[in-house]
Every structure is written in structure tokens, then in C-alpha cells.
Image (cartoon, rainbow, N blue to C red; front, side):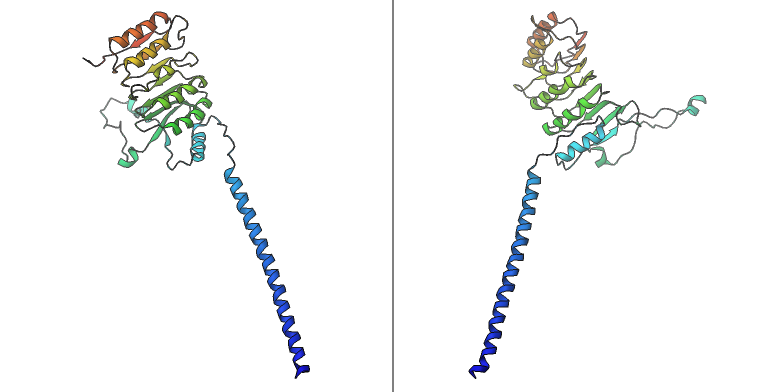
Length: 287
């Protein structure tokens, strides 16, 4: 029995040794997989931590705007659309005897489509995307993030000469951002910011009356401009040391400027030799 048991014991030892060796091989392969997964995870973390390369705007507003909004991970991107115009009569209607046509000065849209934020543009040539000359934004909030996107897009647009931001909820911060890149828009002539009311104490409209800017028409109708803001605008128009040489027309109708604010504006006009039109309009009675 002792001699018969030896082969069995030998086979048992060999089986145990094989199991141990196989187990060690399995541990090695598992270790390799873990190292590969950890290295790939580290690579992904490094890629996520890398700052994206700065985007150089090409002057094509549609593509530049879409790319910058994508980089900001915006869930909704306002659509860029041509500014609507009333349809012109056809040549056949002009040649024939005048007949009163049915009204065609409107287009029917879905009610939800109508209220979606959009950016309306005018172009010299509708077939060329780099010919945008005018931008109109009406009735939706332009926050700091959106204004910083415009800060990158608009200076690259060589033909842009008009910006109209009507009731877009401008604040002191967004006005400061707008004023910072206005001098970079070389052909910007008209800036219309009607219907944007900034809280007293945060008004910085005077930043827009900058001699470095090429703006010739500035409209601040119904912006609740106070006497304090009028004082800053008056100093920006002209002082004993310097005066604005670019602005030709300033519209301040419908604000809260009293005789005190009017005196500040008059003081600036004494030193200014460039402004041709100042429209204070009818200011509300604050008595």
C-alpha cells in the first residue's frame, strides 16, 4: 500500500503545483488589465483637464457663433435668421393697373416658434455668410456668457456697422464687456440699446461714449438713465482736458433725467465740437 500510494501523492502534488502556477498566471493577466485600465483612465483624466485650444474666429458669424456656443456647452443656441422684410411687389403688378392686393406683410408662425430667441441679421449678399452688416436682438436676455461670445465673434466681422440690442436685460457687467470690444469693431457706426434699464448705482453708460470707438450714433431710449448716469455721459462728451471726437448723435429720450442731469450734459456740450444731435426727448416729471 505504501508503494502504491506514492504515485498518487506525486500526481496530487503535481496538480497542486499546476494550480498554483495557473493561479499566478491569472493574477499576472489581471494585474496587466488593471494597469491598462488605470493608464487609460489617467489618459482620459488628462484629456479632460487639458484646456481647449483658443478658437480664432473666421468672420463667418454663423459658424463662429455655433462653435463658441458648443464650447460653452450651451443647451440651447439661438438661431441666426435673416431679418424679415415686407415682400416687394412683383414687376407684373407694377406694370399692370394698380389693384388692391390682399395683405401680405405678415408671415404665419407657430406660437412657440415665434417666442424662441433668435438673432436677426442683414447681409449685403445673402449668398455670402461673411457679409453680415447689421445685427438685431430683441426681447431675450443677453447674459455675460453670451456677451463674451459676441466679444469674440463681432470684432472679426469686417462689414458690421449696426448693432441693435432692444430689451435684452443689459447690466453693468454686460455693458462693460460691450464697451471693452467696441473699439475692435472697426466699422461699427450705429449702436442702439433701447429699453435696457440698469439699476441706479450700477449705471455705466458713459463707457460707451469712448473716443477709441468708431460709433457715431448711440441710442439709449427708455433706459431709465438717471442724473448720476447723465453726469458720467456729460464728462465723457467733453471736459477741459479731453472731448469725444467720434459721436455725432445721442438719443436719450424717455429717461429719468431732470434739470440736474441736463446741466451735466450741457457742461459736456460746451467742450464738445463734434456732436451734432442730442435728443433728450420728453423726460418724466419726478416732482
